Image (cartoon, helix red, strand yellow):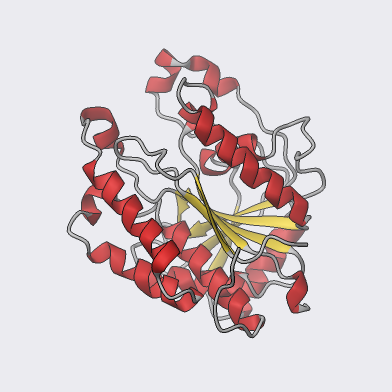
Length: 294
């Protein structure tokens, strides 16, 4: 594929179903819509997404969704039925593709990544942000663009997720690689604390990496790989499934830069959204790596 047709890659701070309707999330919604408008303008043929709500249970194996069609999976806790039962009525019309799933499955296997097919519906790590990014009936609605969901690996091997991203970025065609997770995800802190110290510190560190690290994708990966060494990391991620998609995005960006034969990221190839929109335990920071041009 010619270098000038290769798409950038995105990490989306997806949030929970609360961002669809609770007061105070207007700025988060607005910036997710900005991302959606930008992506729509790229005219992707498909979106391949790794969600913080699908982590493989098999060590060393990535799961590729082969189900067609897929529907919205209301993978929400039982308390929602008592407090906000209307969330179980949310739908998100979308297209899926078994053929694409089989292609990606074979592609990963050909690149030395153990992968298996599964059948599951679209979890809220995908349909919640996509409902805002590509609203039904809007000019940005995804018409004819299949959404394919993959799992992360079991465990916390960040380097393996970087390699997964690199492999996905080698897919032929205009496939957009998206990591949907959260830079900080501690729901217990959200429920029980009022202390913003950890989420603010983690987001500040991430922004510093994105804005001041020597601007090569390898430099970004190396810097982000140091974040789990921070003493406050376990407070940001009691479990790591929500941050693993970020490392897939970093790997995809490394491969894109390598294929383009560039020595670094140029002006306009790092963009951030939803800065400083965090709440206790949760960061909505999102970013793009690569140029958003058609």
